[in-house]
Image 1 (cartoon, rainbow, N blue to C red):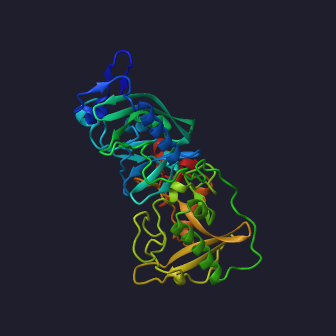
Image 2 (cartoon, one colour; image 1 turned 90 degrees about the vertical axis):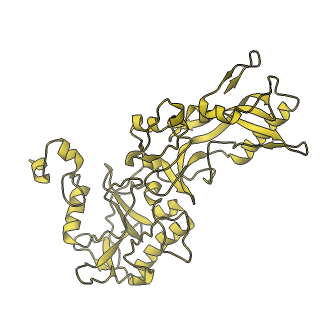
Image 3 (cartoon, rainbow, N blue to C red; image 1 turned 180 degrees about the vertical axis):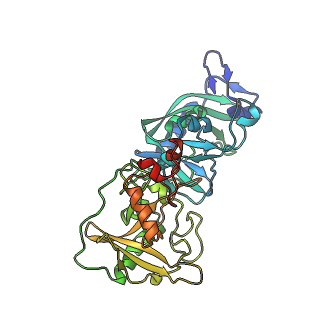
Length: 393
């Protein structure tokens, strides 16, 4: 909305006009307490927003999410995500609930979990400028503009009427002023500043240093516990540090996992379920760290050991986790081998002890464009190949 001091012209997108339709009295000078209202808005912003990374909250825990600050059509044009209900210029559609889902390549900017959803990184050092204050009916309406010092995440797709909006300040019965609307960009329960971690997917070389001795059962339990404890604490940076993580969708395939790949994982349940936790990383293959057996050496990689967590029963095979010797410590192995609707997630119960699965894993590590089951990836199909052997020829 723009209210000129000289013309008092009202130019408001329908989405922002609706809360003001009942107003019949407007003063273009901001009223006698306009400066006081402005100072209150500026103080509230300073109290709630800190320097560093800033995020907006996306509500939901499944495949589709509601993020009021984000323009869905912008996501599709940048190939950052998808929209469930595309918006048009109609007023009815603009008022509808928009649901979005990130693409794998852009999900790295989703860096933290809340009870109701996730936090999307927008940029660094959010600032606010009050451009004008007007007395409208029973409220002082402060026109504000938000900007970031370093737009790095999804800032380009923040709605224009979120970057340029208003804050209402009302006078209570006892004469005090009170801020009625949110100050900020739909941060919700997101931490401020927002933790980022390895959002740039900086990788490393695959571990090759041999351990001086084989790991014990306690070593395997300790490696899994470090990861589990970090997930319970909600510290995704520590959780990534506890992993020896392989990302089979990146050019550099070792160490290029981002916090987003852990968002949809939870720790082994401890008491009552928590809203912020995803499904347990154990994938219901086992329920306790004590279920982890003694590690067995890998047939080819001296840094790698496998520990059985569930005995074979009937037609079901035994399940295994793996640990690896990395930087003089044992770490739990995690693999990103399959993209998903919604958030793509690390898998730690990956059964790398199985011969066929391990062969496919190594082919993908070598750059072969195949899926987890060995079938050609979409890229190979687009080039006209039906099998990995055809691609080699």
